[in-house]
Image (cartoon, rainbow, N blue to C red; front, side, top):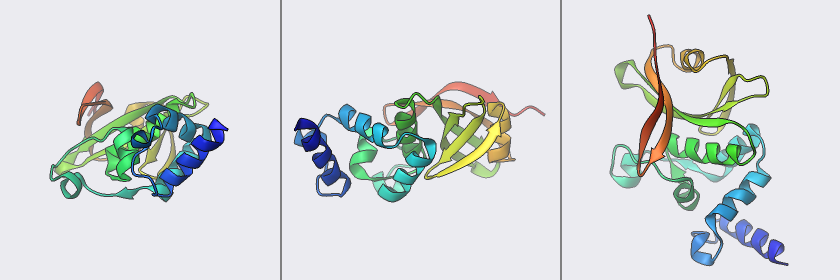
Amino acid sequence: MRTRWMAGLMSLWLAGVLCTPAAHGFPVSALLDRLAHRYTSPHAVAKFLRMEFAFQRDLELFGETDRWQSPEEFLSRRMGDCEDYALLARELLVRNWITAYVFSLFGEAGYAHTVCVFVDTHGLYNVIDQDTVYHFRAPTLEALASRMHPGWTVGGVVEQAGTRGRLVKQITRSG
């Protein structure tokens, strides 16, 4: 009975009837677990992101040039930019025991982008870029960066630190 109630509550929330799951007694971690149970592959996660969320720049949404929403905030707001998509995608993938990272890349002329990188069964790096899966099958993060953006200069694995990102592992283009 409780499982049916929780599934019904989640359906109402996903349909936009409910504003925030926590406000209605539905624990956010339980919602993330249920979403991960439903969306078990990178392709399923990308489809979920495409169907349920809208891209909106931080400046328009928050009046700030860069603000990282937690997966819970993004689920509630249903709008955000590249790092918001990447953080939620990563959260859903790791709950399915898929190795995944949030990866930021910077390049010439102010290029900056954040994606969710996941490792396939062959140990190769691939990407969920907002709501699309790219099978780059790159053997290293450096090779992945070159395939994503040939003009990249620096990048790395990042994690959320409050409303910003924090570099965990840096890579630099050589040569």
